[in-house]
Image (cartoon, rainbow, N blue to C red):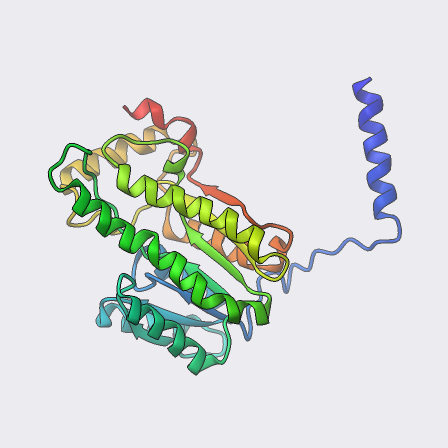
Length: 288
């Protein structure tokens, strides 16, 4: 019976495709010429590789963060990677400041006249158990960077993305599927990001697609100054041992996921979570 059902399904699929030419344009699949991409937190880490990859694929990019020197460095590298040597827009902005966030979008539109891709990526971590006296202070700080700016910038960008049939992609975490103790604030901020994506996908379709990437532990400077380097090194070795693909995630792994979701190859994907963690979320329980 299963074989018969499979054959019937196959015939139906062939019938649906009758007269339709299947297309997969490998040359233009990831061509972002004339597209405008705004990525928060793009002066380092995953955001840096995201803007570099978009630049290499022909896009006009906005490089933004809090450190002007790092912004300049990344912008120069983006320009060198750009096929037409396009100069990125550089904006120093703290995403936790409402006015600076509003100015960031305004400068983007004033410079390029439109917006095609918004990547909500800026974020911080910080391990604190709920019994810690400073837990709520830490909670409010994480929400002010990891969640509120994602919502605010999406809100501000929607009128422009409507005009370009654009897309919103946000950085979440695979920890939303595999909770980790003493990490409530961070995980809640990312779980909220996942739900924000689903709600906006319903609200903004068919004009705007909205998705997230859910990275696993990625080799960046994300935890610098937050966790003891010796502890980090030992933890990373443990993570690799428990990751099915036996390596850490790299920023470029995440950048490729973002570019895919922004591309025409993902034109029927919205409200989705693209997990990029080497399979770690299936085994993370074994870490503890």
